[in-house]
Image (tube, rainbow, N blue to C red):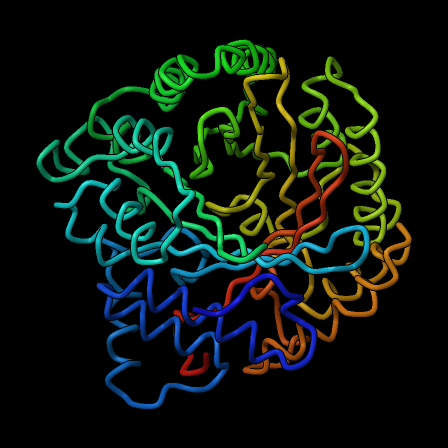
Length: 410
């Protein structure tokens, strides 16, 4: 197994891709289609045979088990975050679409298999089991689409890895869309029940969730967020956190500030620093656009299924308010990926992270060679800025474009 305790971008970048390749092939060994996609996307080479291209075309065309993790249904997403010293941390998410297509195996089995096959000796699945039980279902439990509404997408869970330290750490993501559709229960009801069970180990979660819900209820109807994803780390309960991902339709700086501060009631030093950096990035992208105005892009891009503004609220048992993070959908808001690179370099320069500014453009250009970055958007999906407990974290998310229609690259 590759070693992860070194800077993945020092020396040859092949070490990074061999690490990602290993995780992709090991974690998805039972998923023939995705294993091929993983191999293609991390070597940045065209399809080696028409059979692979045909397989991916079938997956992409099917509405029954396409991936929700990216807009073109590529079942892989990865991200890069630079720390204050300019050292990159790589994260890697997979949507195991073959397992979810069959819908006969409980979600928890996948996380158990991954923990065993990757020899994650310190993985703890206690919170993962609760979330999987409450927020996913198999064909034994019911059939998607038999409830009051049909789910908008078929993905029910993702698995993610962070490449930091001697072995990767694992995270679990759950999408309650299908369970809500089949049972007729609201996502709010499903997630609240999940929080209630998790709070048996971390009573403070209840207070943090109550404060978060109070903010949601205070919003006018046109800003009411949809609850999209719940996530936990695969670590012991006393170290864990519960993350709620929500999407709100209005894409304005005013709305970002509203959600980051829970309507003004949660204003800490780190939230303030995060808002300063968010405002810098917003101004780099959109100039003097009024804070309550949306960017001048096509309405279809603003109102896309993955448009609007995405936030996550990180709940911990030892703090009464969530730590917020905004996901700015640059894939919908920007001209092309080259513009996003320029904006990120400018942001890193503005906050004094010269090493990140120096590396960012090179890393993206050397990692994605299948097309001109100035041709369109799509590689960058989100740029996120988070207020953590003690600092601010900026992360770029990438779609390797495995399944882009009509493409035989990557």
